Length: 181
Image 1 (cartoon, helix red, strand yellow):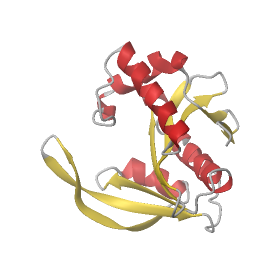
Image 2 (tube, rainbow, N blue to C red):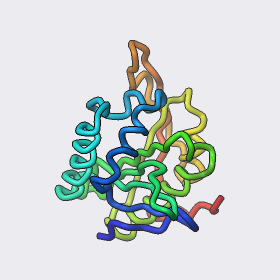
Image 3 (tube, rainbow, N blue to C red):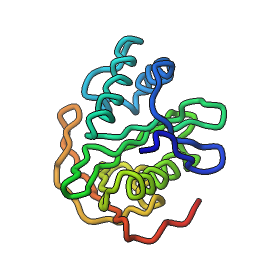
C-alpha cells in the first residue's frame, strides 16, 4: 500500500518520520490537543515513541497514520484510519491539525484523500468518524470530506470529569465523491 498520497495542490499525506518529532511535540503542546493521545507527548522522547507507535500500527495492519504536510514538508497535522477491521472492511478516521493549519480546509482535504486511499488501496468499504457535539469545526471537516451524519452516541467521551455526546458520521466506498473546497 502506498505510504504517500497527494491530497490536493500543495498538500500531501506521507508516513511519519523520526525527523517529525519536534513538530509532533509542538502540536501536542497546543491546549486544544490535550487528551488527543493515550500517553502524554511532552518530551522529544515521547514524540519519538508516538511516531514509532504509528509505524508499529501500520506494520501490524491495525491502523494507517499519515503526516499531513505542505509542499515544503512542514507538518500540518495527522489523518489516520484505525482501528481497522479487515473482516468487515471498516475503519475509524481521526484527524488533527496544527494551529497554523486550522481553518484553511487542511483537515477536510486530508480526510477526503485518506478516504479515497482507504477505499482504493486498503480495500475498506466503510469509514466512520465521530466528534463531540460541541465541536462544530470538526463537524464541518466531516461533512466537507463526504461523511454523512448517522446519529448521536450519548455521553460517549469524558474529559476532565465532563461527559460529552458524540455525533457519528460515516462514508461508504459507494458514496459519491465530495466536491473539492
